[in-house]
View 1: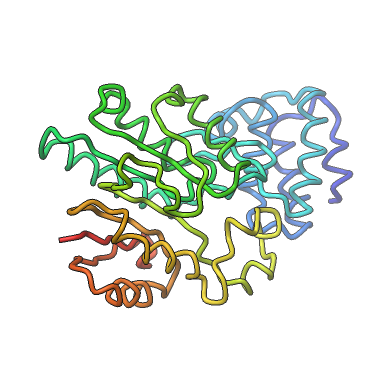
View 2: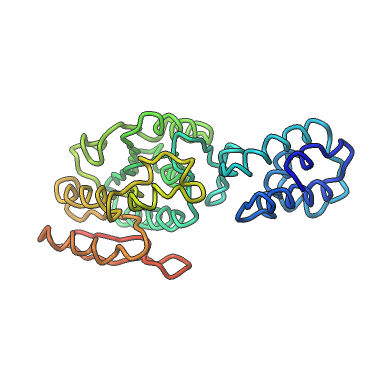
Length: 306
């Protein structure tokens, strides 16, 4: 079936029929996950989720939804990510707005957000001192958003101060929009900066630094595989071995982490040893551990000053 055939399905077709035709069209175009993509796009055109779609295959697809799907199928067949077509990504049970201003939030980064939430919770119950948390390279603002929603009361009371920074003004615009859309825009400090310079927290000392910096190699980014051809290269490219920005951030930690501060750094497959070596070269007293994702990959490096 051609893309034109999928777009030309007459109004009056059922959701089940449309789903089958869009799946076939995307499979023919070489989409890596045609059935899932079709479910997301058809469901979005109908204003329903995937569960509803499966429960109501007999629902009629109207002309407006059919017109939308025709354009969306063509865009997905050309490789554009579904998250950009729909304008959002479901991530950590949140609806995060997405577009070409920033990287699409990945499932792996949920581990980073959950680790940050645990660190903040432990500090809030430990004593009455305000907690200074700083997400570096916030992109779409997804991690800062998850933290802000979890600790809305602590932020409002001043028990937690949260900053989110990025070098790209356009990414900060998107992060600001996401925070505002969820009602926490006034609780997070947004700052433009190059990693930890300038400081986005009072006195330049953070109790917690959280960062999901670019960690793909330049060759991987240049390959343009999948969504890489559509997402901003600056949010992906970590240099020849993927660790250029991570190294720079690690070198800045002694100056910007509080005495017993913690840094959480998301990394790629096989990079943990190199990051440990960078931290050891600083000759600081720190406990370095890692958290693995569901695939068993060491995904988050935890650096705790002792």
